Image (cartoon, rainbow over all chains, first blue to last red; front, side, top):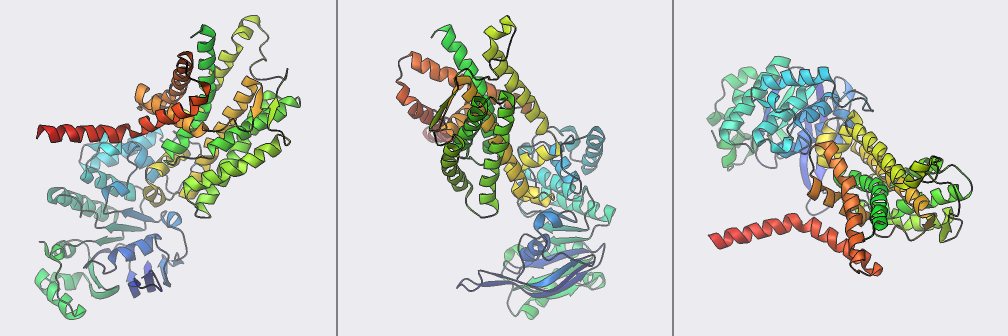
Length: 264
Length: 296
């Protein structure tokens, strides 16, 4: 359902700081797959997600979603099929608007935005139920401004906003990285729950190898803008973090000196 | 201060409040101070003066002013989103261009006097209303605009507009073209500003090509004074605060005049008020830091 062919992205092309962020990446994801993506800093993980979301224009290659070429579409047009959660909890929500207003904006993704009421009664009911399912008590704070929420609560809300209209593809860009360990665990739990309940096709970047192997159905490792390892569910079952590290070192030809990736 | 001067200030405050609501949309809702305002205010006044002096309907003058003001805002927005010019500079460019446009609208004259032309303020026939016509008309107009704006900001489109100023990343991720919401916001903002200019031209019976100078600062002053004095929550109160802020600002100015402030110092005082108001956040945290430093 997602088909990426020859995807290349070069930053600052033709200058001394030229950086090949993605080098001829070819990937295919089938519907319902939950893929975890690992790799060191500058491996191209975030660039890949941003190219899929339409934040960056690609230098070469084609991205197909359900057979349609979406490579040239602007970010806001792709958003109708793609849900996103960002690393920075402040990026996913409008801080000066209430929880229910934020949800309404996400809920009307594929609808005309004219002078209809911003939130209808039935919609509010629906939001309340969905919020309650998060188990964070947010259903009682629907008229609170999002600026009052903690990072974890915001990420949970963003997760709900990204999935309240079922997306064809869910992109999670290290969405638990800036949370404390306990909160991160909770948000991951919610992620798992939402993704499995709705059978969402998901790409999740993480820096935690253990987490990458524990979550999802497939794991991809990136290095210097290339996919160097692609493990299906069967292969992952045989895999341990230690084996993954040695695989990384033999495939990339460099030693893993990033503590963050090894955090267990 | 005489009662007449007091009443005059309140009337002016209510009329300028329409402009202040326009500034509120660009400054608070879209989070960009828009300098087009200095030009679009005069544009509205010029259009209104030309229509009224040639016997046109004063109400039609307000509508036409709104359309012209919206166009000015649209140009500013397109310069920013399509041509990549910084928002502040886009506003300055359009403001400058409007100076010439306004002169053209006024037929090459620098000012137009409206003698005995019909205006929205002298249409009342009943004697009681005629006596308070200006106050009643101004109150009614700002009330209608306030209610319309309040409901608009609670529609789906209104939500999109408000979120654009908050967080553009989130807006695009929700499938909204932020270029379009910015355009609608600036068009609406400058449309209101032009209506305010059109009303002022009818109220004062003249339009002058230089009457827009510092208008955006006055608008900001009203918005900020309103927020500080009357609060920001919930939305209806926030909009009402802008209107009351505008009236309060006029009263402060009138009071300063009554205390003997020379008219020439008006812009200087306005700029100082806004500078103080905008820096309160920074000053407050600096003072707190100093206090903490002394305590430890």
